Amino acid sequence: MIWFLVWPLSAGAQDLRDLQARNAAAHALEDIRREAVQNQIAASNAQERARTQVILRGLNSGLVTGPVVLREWTPPPVDAEAMRRELDFDASMERLERLTQEALAQSNARMRAIRPASEPKE
Image (cartoon, rainbow, N blue to C red; front, side, top):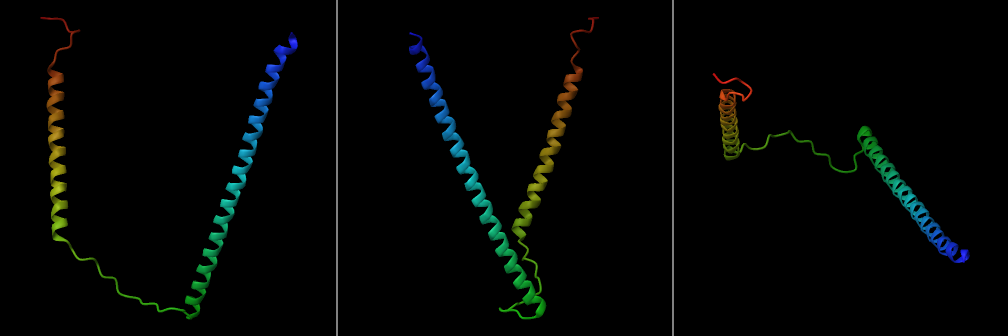
């Protein structure tokens, strides 16, 4: 009779061991995947560094493989409508802030005018 009580417990323990083994395998696969991604990133970074060094060497030696055109910087055109909208928005925000502060001051004044219940009545 004891054998029947022990057998279901051992089956549950075996299921737990199987689950732990699957989890361990999944973690190992995830570690391998992370390492592969890190290696890909490192290889890409190395390629970019090499490409940059080749470009810089070419620029330093004066042997540029393609045309390099240096232009004088010109500021973007001024958009009067966008500037007006921004100024209107700033003015609206300042007005809103001022009204908010006034309303807060009025509310605080009302709260200070209320006599606390702990004060004795005259």
